[in-house]
Amino acid sequence: MGQLVKLQDYISRYESGIYKYPSRFIRLKRRQWEQMKRSWEAQNEPEIIEEFEKVQWDEKREKKKIFTKLTGWLHRNADSDSDSEEILFRTEEQSSFIPQSIDQLKKHFLDEIFHVQILWASSTLTERSYVDSSFYKEEQLKFLLQRLPDTFLLFYRPLFLLKKAPVEGESIILTPTEVYVLLFLEEEKDAVFVEGGGRFWEKRIQKQKKKLVNPMIRLNRTETIIRSIFQADAIDLPIKKLIVSRNGYIDFPSVPFGVTIVDQRNFHEWLQKAQSFSSPIKHMQLKAAQSIFQYCKTNAIPRVD
Image (spheres, one colour):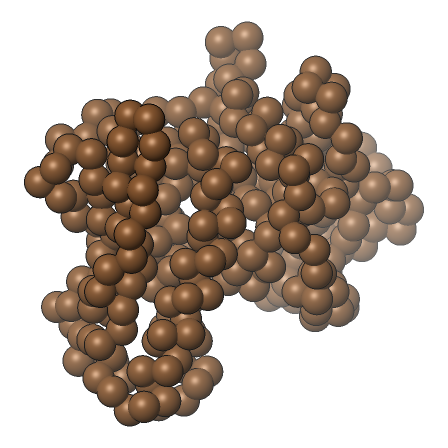
């Protein structure tokens, strides 16, 4: 399950704790899954599931405590103490869904953690950002988070602040060994996107044709930003570009070096290869994320809860 470290211009707790939160997320997710699985196998009620996380905050240090709470849709609830925060599972609909198979249980679990990830990518102890509700239904975002490995860090459509001007970026995936600038090219099913060699490509569906701006322009712009950041901070990670069309086809006869094309013909092969990637989180990967954060635009307000 990929980690959402930045969502557009929302405040993210990863920004101030990039060296601790990725490993913490992996540890908590695995522990929570094992407990949920054991409870389900024992035919216990879903509400018996224990622990996601309670984080005790302090000016000099941060103490973490795991506590028992119930499953259901996720929300955040602050303690009365100003230096503590809880991540809870709401119980209002706890009896509305009982998984009938291990696959249903996995999907239910991943959907819950998806809400946790948006929470982590939109709030800290002292600040929060208002989340556009459409992100909770963003299929491409959910796909990246639920289908990629835990060690992949995702900047989802970040906004960069360059020379005091905001610049929209494409999504960025930081793996332990390389960086991908990612763009989805998905519209009607079985649409064919034909590379045009200039400013425009062409979309063909049945007998209709339509021009669209060359997606490589957007990818190259984000790649240039990331490359300049890495050069300034001595980040040694290769940067590659990725165009994905899960429901269509991409006709790109002469694919440039460093560009990967994924469409219906090779999507499952590409996904299987990504999911089988086995490597721990690397220091250079976290350093790269920290450097990118420094150039990201963030909008947030003080928390009053």
